[in-house]
Figure: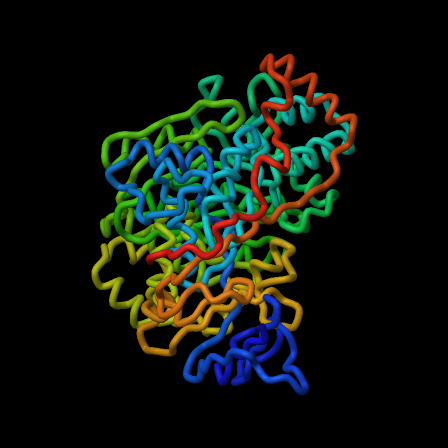
Amino acid sequence: MLIRLAGGDVVDPVNGPAGRRDVWIKDGVIVERPASKRAERTYDVSGCIVMAGAIDIHSHIGGGNVNTARLLLPEQHAAHLRRPAHTPLSNAGWSTFNTGCLYAKMGFTTVVEPAMSPSSALHTHMELADIPIIDKATLAILGNDDFLLSMIRDNASTAMIDDYVAWTVSTSRALGVKVINAGAAAAFKENVRRFSFDDVVPSYGVSSRRIVETLQASVGRLGVPHPLHVHANNLGIAGNATTAAETIRAADGRPLHLAHLQFYGYGTEGKRGFSSEAARLAELVNENADVTIDVGQVMFGQTVTISSDVTRQYSGMRTANPKKSILIDGDGNGGGIVPYRYRPDYYGSLQWAVGLELFLLINDPWRVFFTTDHPNGAPFTAYPDLFELLMRRDAREAKMAELDKSALELTTLASISREYTLDEIAVMTRGAPAKLLGLDDRGHLGPGAIADIAVYRKGQDVSKMFADAALVFKNGDLVVEDGVVTHYRWGKTLRLNPPPDKGIVRRMQAYHEDRYGLSLDWFTFPETAIARENPFAEVACRS
């Protein structure tokens, strides 16, 4: 079918300045205006903003820790929607299905789960397969696993390390590599409770810095488009801006992505020894063109922190709200689930301000990414309110009037007048994520791109505009009308597939048999384990 979106204000900075023009779709792909053919279906989108579908590079939407959070907090988790009987987790009543619907109604069409343990890859992909509409991807966690730490300790060749990283990415069906508090989970097993960038893992004799640099170099040599995704040391601790600064400098001219930088934006000034260092970090990011970051914005209300950073989750258990938590000291990273409520008190006010400072003080929207580290800083459903805070200074000032003034005085937020433009929003949530992930088929509206398109009605209420898209197309298929998901289709799971070296496969077989007494088949899975297409492609879905 040839589809025409007529008369909209197209915001597509990848392909030029914003302006009023038609967008044409044929067979799920954006095309040039046909010379002679008429559209078989026309949508009048005059008075609307037309953008590519949005991309979230860091949102915890599936996997072992997400699943455990549902078990810990049944009172907060419910089966939000009925779903067909033949999706992979249809009998569990999980909210995976609703995840795709809620993202789609905001105009998001691609989401990355950034923390997949390779040993639980099958479970993660089964959860992702239950999420409709959107395309998904994962990042495989390395950096606390015995096999890698042993190779670094024993000065293994770069070729051997590259083979192991490539094997992990391939067998876990990932789109990239993440390191979480490098070495800290391994050190935690030997009663180490704080671990910084130059601390050394007992029994291995390797520092966190060396682990990060080893993985960063390997990802670069392998040609993985997304740079090493780094969850740095000392998350959430006063004074940890120094750790973030050291990690940024360690990039040394090579691409590096720092996750949820807001949680590292803390100094030690003031009576409570907790202040903002966001301006300092923003300046460092501005000076280092090879460094990208996502923010991890805090918003107020109840949430749950989900992390494979077992050291951080152990220390956070004392502040759990409600007073229950789970700690997993597992193979590799382990992790923990700690529920938390962000309040507009001193600490919550400062965290909220730090995230906004980073958004507003980092100059280049191609290098700062829109996240709340869902659900750690806030659920992704808070995105529309965050868009409004970035685009309207008066909205920020109104919110600041409700918050702790002594905390805000230790930030620069009140002095910042910048307001994001629609072009900058489109860069940060469309063009830049696609570029960072190496996905040139999306994030823009040029000919040849997949027809992932979000149409928003203009209005002064920025939050409402982004919360309820007027129209959303996924691969040219209309899935949302007036903020309501009218039906769903199944998206894809995006992955890299570097061919594994036969030598590393033999080594991994021997390693798993020796370490676990199990065949390597227990830790890998064939293509047939996850169906590529779902036969139930036209089932009604309520939002």
